Length: 202
Image (cartoon, rainbow, N blue to C red; front, side, top):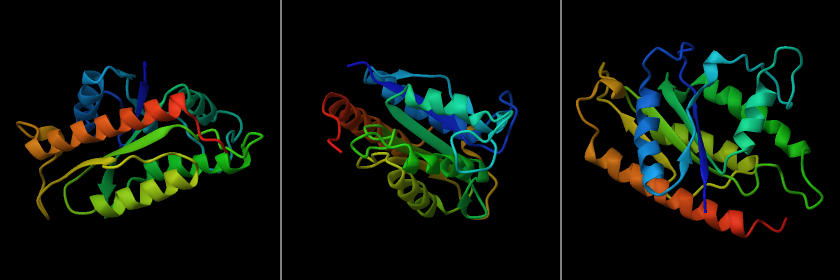
């Protein structure tokens, strides 16, 4: 079964050419998904797009969300990646989650939101603590709007408290991050395959 994976990089850095620790962690996850035969699309730098504030699927002229929404639903698995700022997941990540609120009013005849049958995992980076709090926020919101969350769904790295080291600057990927990335990819592809062949009944 050919599963498709879409990474969304919710860094605050709008320039896709600017190095991002979120991209670096997404790349670790992408390699693990590809080992399992999944097709991983080029990461989308969300801050580079004009995603309007709001809770509908189209906020009017210039809104880039409708196109990104279509791209999301052309895939089976979503990697929602973002950095920790001030102990919270980035505002760009929150913007994506807010726009997904529209799914509540977009159900089919069986009451299923368009995200039903799709799997979501998280990639979180930061210089200090906060990964557990951020993943709790993200997974609750994603599950509320219909996404399915597998066991071991978060791959994260946080640096030393009050430190200045970024994930992208590490000389090698820590073994625990590699191990977790493999588990995240394995569980997500397993679950996505089941849901693709046997959708939720609604």
